[in-house]
Length: 247
Image (tube, rainbow, N blue to C red; front, side, top):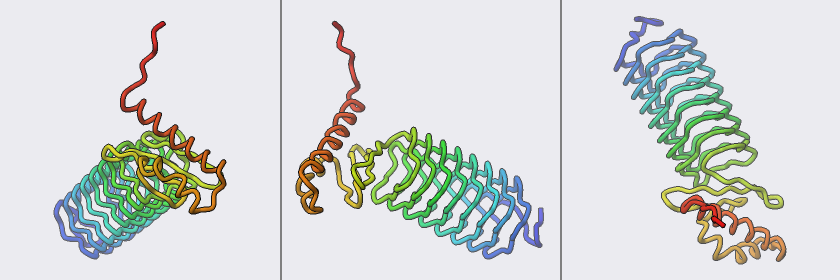
């Protein structure tokens, strides 16, 4: 198969290739080298891109619905407004990729590396992010309804303005003017409130000191204490289960 004079086959060398608007639906590009390729507006629906090297590639506006991107390297790739509905991105490297307003509805991102990625305004409804690395990821205004974030690393993640309805794996809340959330990663519970991000244990020991450093009033600090204690209780119940008392 040839497109724009390029051979479309597994393990092919397409470094810097001009595939602007190309029709590559169902193409087999497993382990292909597509570094820096121009794939803007390309149709890659159902394509096999397992293990492909797409570092720095421009896929803006491309259709990757249902594509197989397991283990693909998309570091620093431009994926703005890409359609990845139902795509398989297990174990993919998306570090620092631009995924602004991307469609990841129902996508499988288990174990994916999304460190520092831009997912502002992204559609992640029903996406599976089990064990994904979301450290320092930008999810401002993203739609995460029904997504699975269990075991994901959310240290430094920005979830302000995100729709977190029915999200699995985190507890979100608002205290005064601050948005906050808690999650468990590698057997440790973390809590972020505003710009402060610490382990739950640290919060429980230092909430008064932190509150006073921001000139919070006593009743405000008590509200934070109550929320942190609630998180501790919920985590205890999740860990040990809740038993009904038989009378």
